[in-house]
Image (tube, rainbow over all chains, first blue to last red; front, top):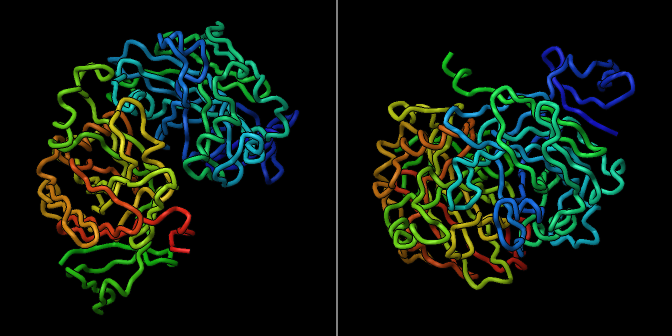
Amino acid sequence: MKHARIAVDGLIHNGVETDSGIKLENGRTVQEHDVIWLPPVEPQTVFTLGLNYADHAAELSFKEAPKEPLVFLKGPNTFIGHRGKTYRPADVTFMHYECELAVVIGKAGKNISKEDAYDYVSGYTVANDYALRDYLENYYRPNLRVKNRDTCTPIGPWFVDKEDVEEPMNLKLRTLVNGEVVQEGTTADMIFSVPDLIEYLSSFMTLNKGDIILTGTPKGSVDTKVGDEVITEVEGVGRLVNTIVGEEADIKQ
Amino acid sequence: MVNIKFKHQGIQLMQEGLFEGPDRVTLDAEQHNISDFKFDVPITGTVYGTLLNYKGAYEQYEGQLNEDPYKAPPKAPILYIKPINTYIGDGEAVPLPQSEEALSAGAALAVVIGKTATRLEKPNALDHVAGYTIVNDISIPHESIYRPAYKEKARDGFCPIGPWITERDSVDDPNALKISVYVNGELKAENNTSNLIRSVEELLTDVTEFMTLYEGDVLLVGVPENMPLLRAGDTVKVEVEGIGVLENEVMDENQVAGGKRK
């Protein structure tokens, strides 16, 4: 089943996808365009992978694929839901999307083996992990100013139950900017698979229910401008729509 | 005498009291010895740490900052997140991973945000601060600061916090606080927030330029240089002048369950 967290008439609801719309817990059915979409899982600890697709690592001119996962964390300020707006600062020259499969942890665990990893997954969603490359500095890279800006991590639309995604390591990903396909890949090309990542992270810290792992992005990063509609899609998981807006116009009105 | 807010272990509501130092707390007009209380983690939001914000810590890297892999000195604040699995209260045990012999202490003044802080300006940045607490930002010792150091900094129990929040107006100047670290009662390191590169106000201004801090979030102003190493069995106390004392014991991870000795 596909689950949404949405605001309807001023109240936050959980809903599920049906043929006739989104069915709320109170039985009412609403339509996709009549609601405000929130992140489908309230973010707590959110891990993000850098350079987890060999072709993307090569694109960013890394000669060798990493031997150990490159992990960084995100704060709650950066997440927005489906059909949200992401601010592009006026001084930025290179801001690119990153289409990613997001894995949601379903129960707490430590020292989880690869073999047992999926027992700790509750489901999946889609994330767009924007990077503002102008702000890259070589300290705890990628630094939070590049990766944790307000509104720069759209996530959603749906939380999809694990049982509904048969082969998480064989899903097509793609990104469209203003209707044109600009990024294509498959989760089969991850350097560290979902079970690898769960084993790695839980080897040194406890994973908790509700934690999210953004698993990295394939190649195809191009600059996006104010007004662009950016759609990140993961096969069978969702199609996440986002629009880039000018930060200065919004703040200085 | 300073106004404090704290949580007793097992009680959800925040309490208000007076810290009358060095070991007296007044609660509901009655005096208590601090050792009569067990304090819980007093914060509700996300903890952000700041790297290289003490002059001495910066100087230790200064010779390398133009070399590979850093290539140029940092411009914006360098931040990291201490996730929720790292938080423990005053008096709880810091687990020493089996693979390690020692951990580094990380005495930090922790700024607790009182209201949504976005694009602050320096003159009124402190208006957004609810108060201050103490964090011992524990790390597995590591040299390189090129990649995020979560394997070294985000382990369970690596972020003791407390014992309480001292209200902002009880602290005259957050940029002139003495910080002392004691291991097994012996003074091992001393510093002062007057040695910060970015003052509390400047750090809040520069951080909220790119990300919002919410009520209950915590910004660590940095960890001073030459922090002591901690081994199994050591008791570490971090004292921040006018704020309080945060005390924890380091224990082999196999001896710890639920923050306590098994």
